[in-house]
Image (cartoon, rainbow, N blue to C red):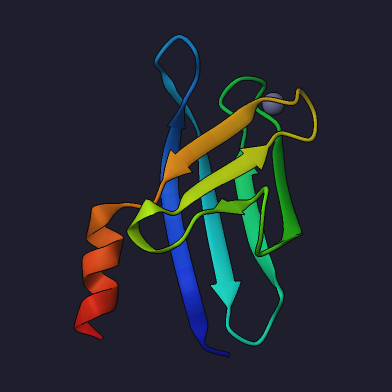
Length: 92
Ligand SMILES: [Zn+2]
């Protein structure tokens, strides 16, 4: 199983506190990515599989954005692809 993309990010709530986190793992052989998150707003944790397309993944390359919505409170966790990750990919 080859990993196509992986990211781990800390998430802040509306009060600016780091209360949650998200990890996305996309394997090359699978159409869905594993989304493992803890919502910074309500504390709900879940692991689920989502299709590697909108609304989870928006855009391409270094402009790629991610959107994960909490199943419990509906909070939208948005984040950009890190530049660091883009550099890592080029080296390989
Ligand atoms: Zn939530």
